[in-house]
Image (cartoon, rainbow, N blue to C red; front, side, top):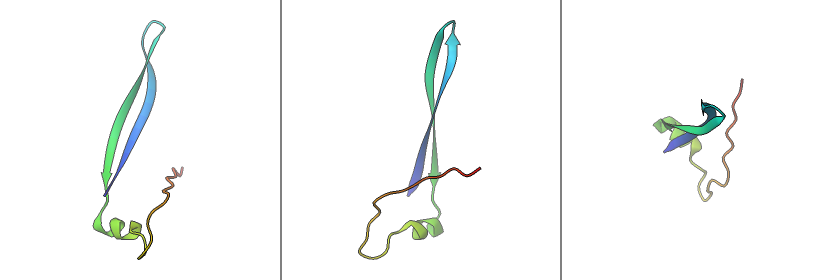
Length: 54
């Protein structure tokens, strides 16, 4: 089980020229985290909410 995050940015690459760019990061879950995420018997995951806390 893994989480894939795609970061998107935009930067100036020339005079009046801008380009979008992307970076990808993959985070593998530990066995303990997989057990925490695993749904209860007879249920499945319907939504996942990802929050960034400052």
